[in-house]
Image (cartoon, rainbow, N blue to C red; front, side, top):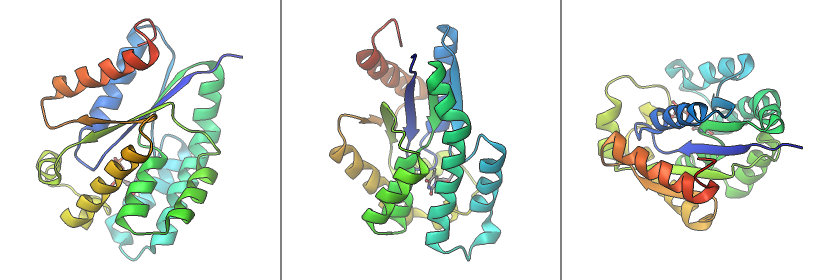
Length: 209
Ligand code: TMP
């Protein structure tokens, strides 16, 4: 049976991962592959409704455990409804965030116990693991500058929260060097994109990437 490939993009808010995930999705489409481009949380009706709850600054009283479970709930629906069927069809799945965001934000940023995060991630992802994960890394101040003014509930946490999230991402890359690749995103958009394409080619071959 055909089985597709799953590539996820990660990083602190303002790192440029959404731009690069979208560019890579287009890149694969141009090469003639079927692509499922998704954002987590989101990309299904239910997951988008959960996303709106999660990001609404009005919900500033949300308990961190509620936050964790809502991210996992949104992800479970996304995997069941979109990601698993796409992989079964042999498509490329390109994801703007996946369970590593939970490790970095709820595990790092919110300091929820690592064992809970691991179990929750296994449940929320229905056991699906990306083949390759990019962390677009850049200093917190530069990310804040690129992000501009508008802030959702998580972005309102500010600089030291983002610093903790960044550190958690870098620790994750150390621990899972085979799957997780850190890209220096402090240069131009084209420079970052070239690095991403190079890693994809090295991993999957020129014909496939
Ligand atoms: P986005 O704006 O990059 O799509 O992400 C939405 C926000 O949700 C962003 O601030 C990161 C945060 N987030 C978590 O805290 N935990 C998660 O598991 C995910 C997927 C996102």
